[in-house]
Structures are given as structure tokens and as C-alpha cells.
Length: 421
Image (cartoon, rainbow, N blue to C red; front, top):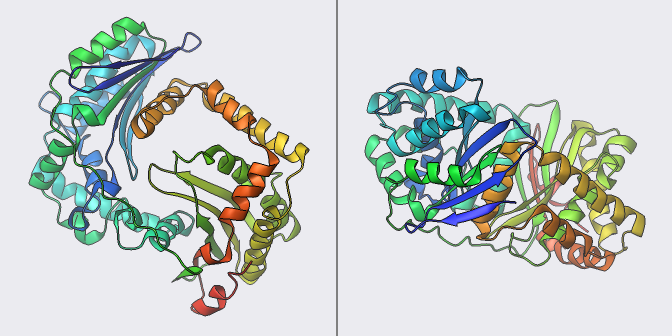
């Protein structure tokens, strides 16, 4: 059973004992990401994440950091999203103290040296180039740009080449001082641990954490009165697309109904869209639903890579399934299969200590509430066919449709005209 401990300075510690594993994961999650940035510093959350592995006073170089964890076969990395940034280290249980010492050291004591900042600019710019050269990855960036436009929710998490080039020590230090604070941080230790001992060790390591008030993000502005299309011309042998609508955020009472709708339409190899577009049309290798729910935004979309000559048929096929599920109730058999799919995937996904850490920590950071897997599955079980029909009617309306597309096409109007239900 997990335990949440809140210190006087606001730092939250979550411990999740697991006796059936030989590993321990330490995950630090900070409530900041690209949605907390201004246009001038777009990408700074991601840049700061990179810099935390460049050296501390105790471990003055990247090699000094990596060699220690490599020496015990540790798995360690970091990640940046729109609303959070995370750092983790997963090791064999006997090396927990070492991993905690390293991960706390980079979090609290990174030097942010100008010479390293200068080198990392080139690395991140190449990362941006890499994603743009991979349309199956870049299409999601275009999708959020289409939905949210010129505001933080619509910007690339990595920033632009211009904003990345403008980063310096002072900007990084100021951002870290404002956001990397006790009240804005959740630390989780999951795995084969002594719960009481783990809490005391985390308290000791993080006693020097900043305790100022973090900066809050701006509210996302959402407005749509007609279908929208964003076309990015690129000579490709395959069209990559996102086709969908704005959806519900994580606080919405129908959030779990939305998850089930996503599974039924495109979450499984036997889902409606997979069968229709891949198996019947033979138009795609990959096709799936992407259901995203953040604190203030959400979307429901189908993402696919389809043959250039079958792109129009594929778009029409996806829209047909959207319309069908919004006018006909799903069968009891199909609904049960979707629920059982989620139950099975939940069980499989939570076997490892790093998955347990992410599961509990993300809930605490984003919702300030933690539900056990059993509590979540009870909510899933309560969803009825009428609930699916109701939200499908609400979501799948012609005026709400959006299409982002990368491929060898320049006629946007042709695709705009396809957005009909």
C-alpha cells in the first residue's frame, strides 16, 4: 500500500513498497513544463532537464554522474512534458542509497555552466531537427499547434531554434529557482524498500530544497466554431495524420468514459478503426487513438500513417466510425471487451517499480489525489453503453473536427472539405 508524506515545507513524498521485485525506483516530478513558459523562453523546461546531467559540485562532469549509475547497471533518465518534468533512477535494491544520492545531487546542485550550455544548444537543436525528420513523431507537435495556436499549449516542448539559441545561465537559474521548489515537487520511491527508512532518507537528502512559491501557468484559451485543418508539405511515401476533436481534461466526470471510447475505436488490434483502415482498406501500418487528458486540456484523436493514394478514403473511413459510434450504442460484448482490455493492460503495466512510481506520482502532482488501480477500475466498470453514446454525440460534431497532416500535398482546401459528419 502506498503512503503519502507531506513535509512542513510542502514537499510530498510517496512510498510504494513492492516485495515481489528486486528493484527500487526513485522518481522526482516537478510541476512545470512547456505550459509554464513564455514565448521568449519556450523550451527552457526541456533545456534545464538536459543540463541536470552535465555536472554538480560533487560530481563535476557528465561522466562522473553516468559512470556511477552505469557501474551498478542502473536505468536512469529524464523527461519533459507540458505540465511536468521528471528525473528518475532505477537500480537493484541494494543500490538504493547510491541512486538517491545521485538523483538528489543533480536535482539540487547542478552547476549549469555556460560552456556546457553552449554545447547543449547544438544537441537540442539537432534533437528538434531529428523530430522534424520523423513525421510520425512531428505530426503530434503539429496537432497541438492546430488545436491551441500561439500559446504555451500550442508550442513545441523542445522550443524553437531561436529560443534554444537564446538560453543562458541566468535564464536557466531563474527558472529553476522559481519552479524547482518544495511545494511544486513530488518524490516517489517505489520497489523493494523499507517504507519508514526510505522516507527518512528522502527527507535528509532534500532538506536543502528551495521553498519559494512557484509560478502558475496561464489558462489555455480554447475556441473553435468550424472544422480546422493544418497541412504540412513534405515529400513522403506515406501520409501521417491526426484527426479528431478537443476532449475532456483529467477532472471531467466522463474522463474514464472517454478512455473506453478510445479503446473501442482505436486502442486494440481488434478495434473498429484498426479493422477498417488497416485490415479492410489495407491503407495503414499503424493506426490508433490518442486520448490525452491534462489538467486544463484534453483531446481525442486518431493518428495514422496511410498510403498517399488512400489518404482520402482513410479520412472518410475514420469519420464514418466517429459518426457511427455517436448514433449507435456499442454492444454489451464490445463494451466488456474494452473494459477487460483496460484491466489487463493496467495489471501488465504496473509490474515494475518505475511504472508504479509514475502511476502514483503523476496522479498526486496533477490531481492532488491518488486513486489505487482498483478504484480506477471500479470507475471503468461503472461506465454504461449510454455513457459512451452520450460523449460520442458530444465530441464528434462537425464544427469540432480538426485534421493535421504531413505529406506531399499542397491543396489544403481538398482536405478541409473532407471534414464532414
